Image (tube, rainbow, N blue to C red; front, side):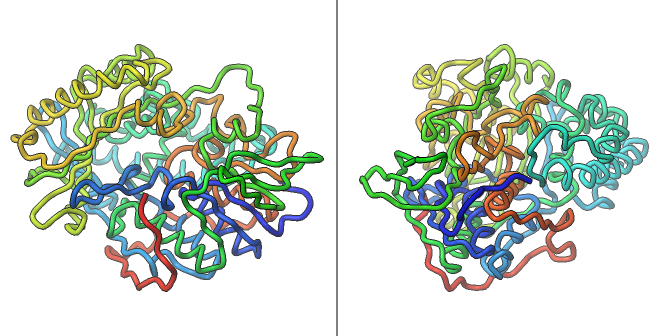
Length: 523
C-alpha cells in the first residue's frame, strides 16, 4: 500500500463530516496531532442538524447500518460508540407499501423475515428468501475485506482468488436478474434491489455485486441513535476532542500552500496560516479539486447519482401505518429509474422513503407533535432540470408530493403541517454538491473500486482524500471506511477487523453514558 512520505506528525483534516471524524479518530489512535477544520457552525457535514421551530431535523442520512464501523473509529482512541450514543435496533427495519395496497414488514432477523415473506407471498417465496439471505451473506464476506475495506493502488489488486469467488457468486451479472433467481414476486424483488438507487444505477443495469448494500439494509440490522442521526457525528467530535484533536468550526480553508511537491500549510479565509505535515481533504470532490488546482484526468467525465427532493415536515399528527422507515413503491419501476437516470424527468409514479424519527425519540418534536422526512428521488442537474429551474419547480413539486402522500393513505397530511422545509437540487447545488446531488459520484463499473477517484493525489506527496466521492463510495458505512482508509494512507496502518454484521446481536437497546468531552452546536 502506498502511503504519505516524509513526516506526518501534524495532520490537518479539512471537513468534520463522518469521514473526516473517522479519519481524525484513527489518526489520533496512531499518535498523530490532528486539527479538524469545518466551514459550518458544527460537525456533521451531510449528517447535520437544523431547527424548525421546536423540531430538531437531521439534514442528511436517516438510516444507520453497520454501527460497528463507527465503534471501530471510537475504539482507535480507546473509546466506544456505545458510551456516547444509545442505539435501538429497529424491528421491523422498514415497512414497505405497494401500489396494490399490500404491506410488508422488512425484518433483518432471518426467522422473522421468513415468516413475514411466507405470510405475504407464500412458502415458495419464503424458501427463496432464505436462499437469497445466504447469498447476500456470502457476497458480503467476499467483498468487504478485499473490495470495500481496502486501499487500491492499482486495478491489478483485483487479481485475487476473491475476484473468482465473486464471479462464481454471480457478482458481475445484473442485480435485478440475480435477485429474480431467488424471488419471483415483483414486490419482494423491489425490497432487495431498490438500494441500487443509492449507488446511482438502475437495478436492471447495476452489477449484482451492489447487493452488498441490500445486505446492510436487510440482514445486518438497522439502528436508530437516540437524538437522531446527528448524534453520531456529534459523539465522534466529542471523542476526537477528548483524545486531543483541535476542532475549529466556522473555519473555511481557501488555499493549500505548496512547495517541493508537498502541502506545507493551509490558509484560512481569515488569512491565518496553519502549518502541517499532511492534509486530508474530506470536502466535496469538486471543492477538493478546486483547492488542489487540478482534477485527475479521466477518459470520460464523472457521472453523478440522481438527486433528491426532501420535505421535512413537523406535524400535529401521524399515521399508524407508518413505520420508523417506510418505503412506498409506485406501480412503475423500470420506467421510474429510466426517468431518473436517462430521461431526466421527475418520477411519474414516485417511490418514496418516509422516515418518522419521533417514533423512537419524541424529544425531537414538541410535545404531541411528530416529525416526518419524505425523500423523493429526482434527476440530478446534469440530466434533469437545472438548479435554477427548481426555484419555480420546487413549490409545485412540493404540492404534488403532498397530494401523492394523501392519495397513498396519509389523509390530512397537508393540513397537519406546522413547520416545513423543502430541499431541492437548488439547495444541494448551493451547498457545493456537484450536479445538484447529495449522493455524489455514482457507482458505475468505471467508478467503483480501483476505478473510483482514488484517495491519493498525484503530484503531491502528503495529500489524501476521503468522503463519498472517493473510495470506497457513498453511504454511512462506506464513508466511515473512507476515513479509516485515508488515515491508513498517512500512518501506514493496514490492520483491519474482520467483517461483522451487527455490533451486539443480542441487544436491542444499547445504553449510553454521559460524555465528558465538550459538545458542539448543531449545524
